Image (cartoon, rainbow, N blue to C red):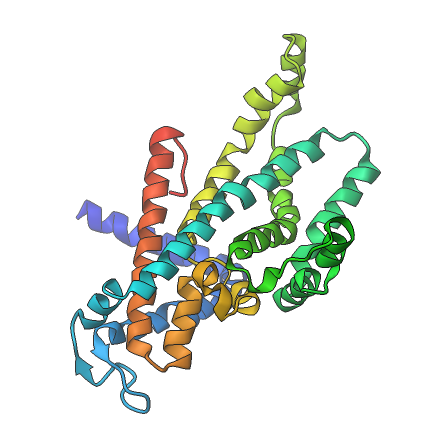
Length: 310
């Protein structure tokens, strides 16, 4: 009886909070509707990974085929090639692209000239606002056979490199362009985290004789560790979802060997070849791997660092 009374009082308290702050709850309506309509309801379409889908027929497939499409991509050598390319590009993004905003934020934090600091910040995060289509166009123009890079190479070495059609150069072009486009924007997040560190910690460290390197190692890095861990876990979760748009705009059949990734392979198999069930099976596999990586990274983070997303 007592537990029931407590439950009734709790429900009344919840409804009282909703009635008091209904304007704040109303602001959540559109975001919730967006996620329900465009994120959760489409999950029902994953059923066609186990059913044969025919365009024009039932949206949930015509015939149950079980794990047929799962076996198809497991036995498909092309899938494992694009899977390897995805892992390599994702790994390079984590090893090269992810740490650079941290380093840039630490360097900017050491600057005392506010004008120069603001200038560097502005120049570094402006590329984030440039459309991926424009970025891809700029890259193709720069590294084309008669582009700026080859003009410099021709003037200095007398030879040119066909970067666009050379599969060995694709990963370097993709990662370097990703650094240019995302480093400045990521720096903002770490600079915001740096502002939360208590200045008295630095004063005490200076009194104890700690130099700037020791202050950075023992105060600054631990201070931004929660932000680093959170973003790292999120990046690991999207490990297999490397930039579809940029790769689609930059690659060509001559660079498939190193450039073709799961997302572009899904595009060709699903939309171009109309093999929707097979593409859905691969997409479901990618999602399960991503979810596993998120849970694994969060568990390791909580065990090693004592902090995680949840």
